[in-house]
Image (cartoon, rainbow, N blue to C red; front, side, top):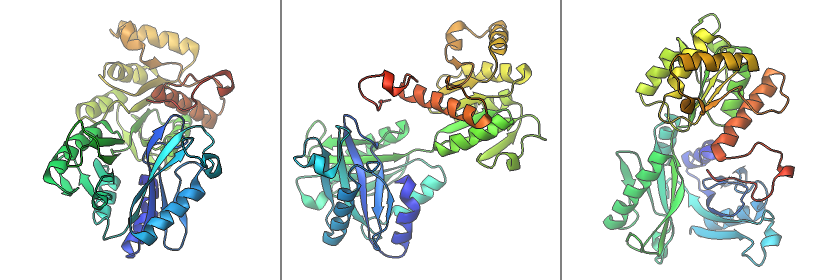
Length: 373
């Protein structure tokens, strides 16, 4: 929903009703992940996508129908349907779509959710998507780490879903949870879709150079909250890095150590060291490689620079086990030359490490195209 919040809020603020269709479950290969959303406005305009084009027309009709009826609906599209080929999900997978009418009456907490997302405050929305009693379908809880608003229909169900949804939120995961009709654990009957809106992952780029500017744009495109840090104030200026959310003048190792101490570095964080100077990159890599949980650590340099850097890091006490986490030289081998091409190379390696991709051409691989975490 994050991608279509502006369009959805415009309808909500105007007092209208939008048809909102969300991917809540995928089976086998699917073009979009759970949480992908399409919004159909009262004027018939569309924002967002649930399948990259495969079943958009069918989902558009579904979203329009739920606005007219006022009743949410869970619909499955895929190879299990007799008319799967007709709706066009040719990737061989299955997607479950939950469509609902969204207005001030059906979703009074929407503005608060949008405010939390904008402020990078973790929030989750838990919505009943299936239940023996149709009156429960569409009910929701809006949760933060210490807050809860709304009700699913009973105190027992609210308590069970609140506990589990907070666990998903802490992990940054979006998923469907299954309970008995009154929230009984290890039973079936009620399904609850929990959409987690954890703060965006961070990309911290050290070195205020032209390659950093290109990588900041690439990181922002991928949804990262980008920080550029350099100890040289003449280079580290917001004007040189418009795609970065913040530009920090500080010694890289001091900044990273302070961020880690504040809990601002986690398993989704990408750390990219582009300084080309051992007095900057060796100290910051000492800090980075000893952090307990980081998504990616890469450093730029030639093969000769790489060998020299490894020697310096070992002399500083970094172990071979710690060095295994280092991507050096940074990026995948795609023949990149320009800063923009190099940024694509680095981004591709970050994606491959995040999802477990091989980095090989798909024509040389077999099996599933889309990887799980």
